[in-house]
Image (cartoon, rainbow, N blue to C red):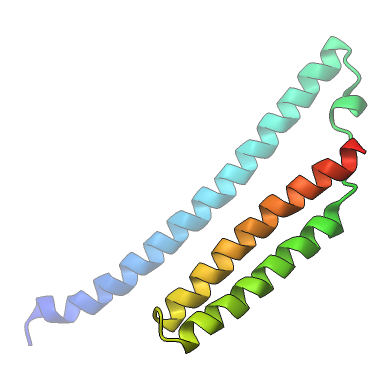
Length: 122
């Protein structure tokens, strides 16, 4: 066996380790600098005398569970539609499941936002 043939698996594992470490480092640094920038922004607002309690107040979500329920109903309907499509051999089963879930889940999101906006205006 040549030396290059024995090094190929080692370089493959080393590449995976380096990629995972790099990804982990990038995520940690992104979070760190995001928190650091947010802290700088708050300090600048405090120095200017702005009341930050109004800016960083949590927004009230009136229709959170309603939207979540409509989206879940859409996903369930999409799954049923995908099963029906796969039973009739119209398209491959995996494609039918994903297409049904994505289509009806997206429709559920749109419907939930529309209904929540309609409820809020009344």
